[in-house]
Image (cartoon, rainbow, N blue to C red):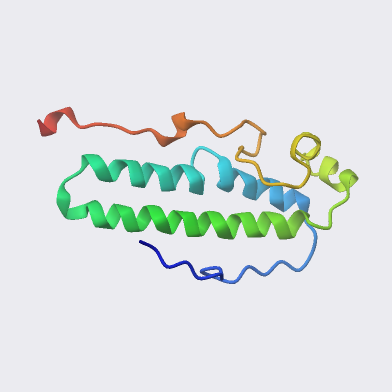
Length: 127
């Protein structure tokens, strides 16, 4: 179905450790309007729309997963050399305690990702 190339869609260049910037990016990883929610939203909506655009929504949804991969890479590179003290100073102390430097789907405030972010809606007027 897919051909996966073991390279990012766009290069991710991070020149220094910056856990504060990582915290901002975590919102884009697991927040309500982040890449995971967007990907799932598009892939879910493709089943309830006219046939003409199903392929387009499928393509957009899978593209969002490529964005998710780039965000994950940026967060990893921004935190890989951070000390626990730097993680704490950046507001990532609780994240570090629970997950170490591993990525976890949560928003910048530390709230876990939830399926309510997908916001699937129907169109009763289409009946």
